[in-house]
Length: 129
Image (cartoon, rainbow, N blue to C red):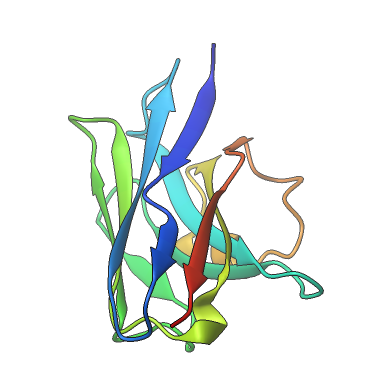
């Protein structure tokens, strides 16, 4: 079966760190642009960070730039989101999505998930003391 499975979420104190993982099954990520999106209750879905399928180009939302780092390991068919200096406003469900050969920024600013080829069910990140 084809799926993306997120993991690594949990409860962390402000200023702490988490590393999210997105593992692909049933297909390889080599030619897919990958993005991390998040949605908090009552708020619109937000593109957090995306990484290209080729040259490693990345995009970060202004709210996370300098704190989050996206990376991919094609050999492991896995994408990561290292989240440092976490803030309460980072609390959300984080989703991983894949789009074939998509421009990085274009993918990350999309409000609709209809254009995504695959997406996961999400992992919950709660930043609270």
